[in-house]
Structure formats: structure tokens, C-alpha cells
Length: 149
Image (cartoon, rainbow, N blue to C red):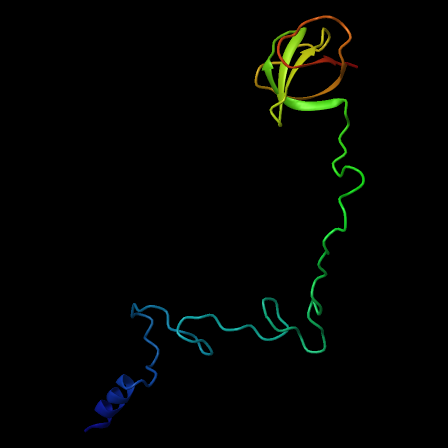
């Protein structure tokens, strides 16, 4: 067998082939140090490396602390909200003085506020309120007065 045929058979037997010429349209070949198309592992101590640089401890040398089970419920509420503020969507609106509001817990409020101005239906609002002392009936819901200014 001539030498050219022997080298061609060696190439087919798993020996690396020579790099194609610039005019040949072939797919990318794996670069040195990679295994079949996988990216090379970055050297230790570089960004993206799973191994910290020499002489430097890893970012978290210990396990994170875990909180234990509480021995009892909290003594005070943990979500202290002002009692004079309500937030919700206007369900009966307009220029007033009576409005309807439904909060996030589906509680309905009947609000009276002669100086509250225009509150369009569907608007999400947060209002400062107080107990109602007048005898005005603003429809279904918990009666409250809108505090302005």
C-alpha cells in the first residue's frame, strides 16, 4: 500500500484529521482541551470556576444557620397596620358623598365622605377612615366616614 493510502486509513481509524482549508464549508471542530463540543472548564480561581483560587477559602465555608421552631406564637401582631387606613377597590363611586369599597379580604365598607371628591368605580384607593357618627345610610357594608385633610 502506498504511504498516502496508509495515512488515509489511519485517519479513518480515529486519528485526528487535518484542519479543513478556508474554502471548505464544514461545521466547527472541537478546540483543544474540549470533549466533543463541550466548553473547556475554566482554570481554578477564575470567574465561573467551581474551585476557589489557591490560598482562599470558599465563599461559604459553613452551612447556613437554620431557624428553630418558635416556642410560642408572637405576643404582638407581626403585621401591625394602622387601624384607621383601609385599602381596596371602589365598587360604588362617583362624586359622592357615598361610596362603596371592597378590601382584599372581601369586606365591604359603606363610606361617607362629602369632601372626598370623585372616586371612580374600579379605582384602587387607600383611605383614612373613622367611625361614622351621622345617621347617613350609604348602602351595604361596614359604615365608616372618610377623613380628609
